[in-house]
Length: 233
Length: 233
DNA sequence: GTTCGTCAAATTGGATCCAATGTTAACAAT
DNA sequence: ATTGTTAACATTGGATCCAATTTGACGAAC
Picture 1 (cartoon, rainbow over the protein chains, first blue to last red):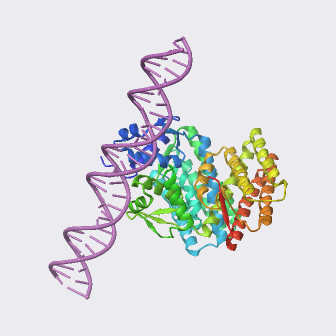
Picture 2 (cartoon, chains in turn cyan, brown, red, orange):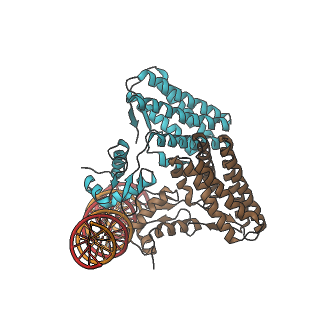
Picture 3 (cartoon, rainbow over the protein chains, first blue to last red):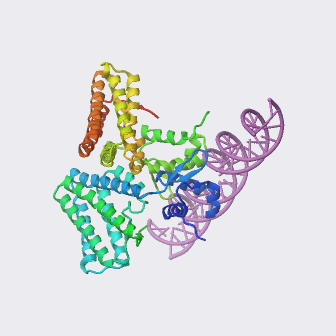
């Protein structure tokens, strides 16, 4: 039984997000520690972290309570991600675009272009696109040279669909999924174009819309019940 | 020697922010614990928290390192606060303004009006205004019904001047400080007016500008070296 | 003289132990 | 029967102990 360092945190997070722990469930340190076969110390640390992530609330003297994530909550997180990443791209323009950043972004675009060159899609290619997507967004946040953006985003990072690390897709309609992701990739092109042209406000608006688009497809797919989540971590 | 629960975290945070711990200083658990006269457990938890706040970075296997907050960093945090609070007010409008929220906001405005009624200012009145200001901003964030905004803001909450809980003022120019804070208060009026009128985009823009204004006066005062920080906690 | 290997010191992470505190239930008295 | 008081229990927070891993230095061999 190999216990990774972050295992406790990840396991608890997954239990909450998957619904294994229902909203309002109270979590105490000792039972949780026994359940996971670890001592109370890592559990205590994990609880603190999950509280800061907004997944748990602390009840004074009575442990922690699960704060279920509603669809509204996810929508709110996506909105937050939109304005923060929008700020990032605007600040890239305002502070002056570093040439190396532009070339890195163009590499991301090129890698995506190659992926979309043939009009077929399977899980492996989606996995690859998730990684490209992650790199692209990561570049922009880092490129903004505003560390506060990264830290503010960090909290949403683990929420399903509020994070760029997670994409849901419908495995029964790969054709449609191709269209959707290709559209997202085209938005990436437009964003880079706006940045390169020094159009800060346009880049910001595009970035917000980009987040919204992800949310829309999430709602669509989640409603159909045919979702499958792919994450890179 | 009464040790409060959060004492360790607060003490370490103050040491970092006050410059007692210089940028790049490495912090190990044991020396810190001995310095503060506590065991390693609370120190460990505090380090984790400070890492999430962005004040420390973790060096793998070599403890933590102080990430000094530069002026650029503060400016970045203020910008983040601007877009997030801007989002909050926009969403208040978009989701439909609750009547109770509007009345609460108006109470904040009225309390401020009374404070500014006579054209004198002292430290006690500033203290009172800081509290009113905090309530006002808190109302807006809570009123957005978007919990992600609150959690994202939470991280900046402890940074000087990136937080609404801290106002700097120049004790040698109370006249000027009166003007400055009164201007901020007038912005509050405009924001409430925009919200009440359903002008989401205008409210958002005003909110961003409101954050910028705070930053401008901070830079002005900090440069003069005559600053005094008032915090409520 | 340089490089590689081994050993010791440092340091973090996890486990268990102890103290403090609040909550709940039971029992007794009115 | 109801209410108040007390005692036991549950639960968190802090301290110390133990294990694992890495870093750095010193020495030996090439």
